[in-house]
Amino acid sequence: MKLNPLINFCSALAPVSNEIIELLRENAIILSVCKNTQLHPDGMGGDNAIFITSGTLRKYTAIENKQITLSLYGENELIGFTEIANYLEDESLEAIHDSELILLPRDFVEGLYGKYPEVDKMARKIFSMKYQKMVCESRLCRLPSADHRYRLFNIANGKYRLPARILASYLVMREETLSRLKTKNKDKNQIKCGV
Image (cartoon, rainbow, N blue to C red; front, side):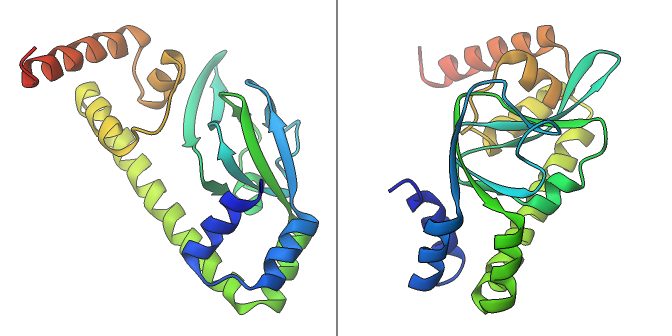
């Protein structure tokens, strides 16, 4: 069933009752989006939490006609409606690849808080995961060396398949620098493997 990734995600945070699972089946909206689909501000993001079952999304801003990737969201990650609602006026959310999403309407999620204590427990764990992600992103952007940023990203985020222009903007470097670092690290890996 298409809701299984979300149910598994929630179950890993706290026990999920059959009643909550049934409510998810009634209220969740399963959505397929194509690459480059805008989810915010001109899309369905604002009043929904978004769970990504497959694909990759990015939050970005445009400065002097150049897109800067601010955050990445991958498979089995939840983007809360409060998180999206707090984006600045010039920030957007888009699909980098064709993606499968599960939308959870704001009213539905808020209703769960009042009725099911386990939802509050799940939310606290999700906030903790979000905090850890922000710490990692903050650390990544503060490293002065492009090489260090690239290596740290590869260690922590091997799950993302990203176009070079998006990865370069996320790692605060030019595409040429990223290309040079990829080649350099590829050569190092071949030397380690005895190639």
